[in-house]
Amino acid sequence: MNTKKTIILILIVIGLILSVYLLNPKEEPTLKIIEGEKVQILEGEFIYNYPEPTTFPAVVRSSGEKPEETEYKGIELSEILSSLKVDISKIEKITLNAEDGYRVIISSEELNESKNLYLVFERDGERLKTKRQNGKGPFQLVIRRDPFSQRWIKHVNEIIIE
Ligand SMILES: Nc1nc2c(c(=O)[nH]1)N[C@H]1C(S)=C(S)[C@@H](COP(=O)(O)O)O[C@H]1N2
Ligand SMILES: [Mo]
Image (cartoon, rainbow, N blue to C red; front, side, top):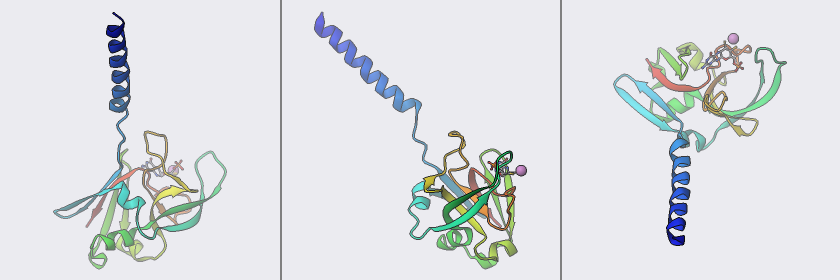
C-alpha cells in the first residue's frame, strides 16, 4: 500500500516536471536571412556570440514616456551581412520583417552610411526580451539617424536582401 502510494507520488512529480518543460519550450531566437534562392537561418547564439559587437549610446523616445538615455549593444547591419559573405555593393534594398507584421525598408544609400544601422540584442547590459515577454527583441534594428525611432523595427525575424 505504502509503496504503491510512493510510486504514484513519484509519477505525479515526474509528470509535473515534464509538463513544466513541455509547456515552456525554451524558444531559441532565430533570424532568417533571404538572398534570392539562398536562405540562411542564424541562431541566436551566432548573434549573441558575435566576436566584436558594438556598444553605443542612444536616446529612446517611447510614446508617453520621457526620453531615456540608454546604451545598446549590437552589430552594424552591413557588418553582419559581410560576415555572411553577402556582397554589399550589389544590394539595392533590404527589407526587414517583424513577428507582428511591421516592415522597414532600407535603401542601399542608407546601408552605406556608416555607424547608422545596428541590429541590437542588448540594452543597458540586458538581453532584449521577446515580444512574448513584452520586450522589444529578441532583435531590434536601431537607426541612429532616426531619432524618433519609428523605423526602429522590433522583433525582427527576417531580412530580405535584394
Ligand atoms: N515590430 C514593430 N516595430 C516597431 C513598431 C511596431 O508596431 N512593430 N512601431 C514603430 C513605431 S511607429 C515606434 S514610434 C516605435 C515605438 O516603440 P516603443 O514604443 O516600443 O518604444 O517602434 C517602432 N517599431
Ligand atoms: Mo510611432
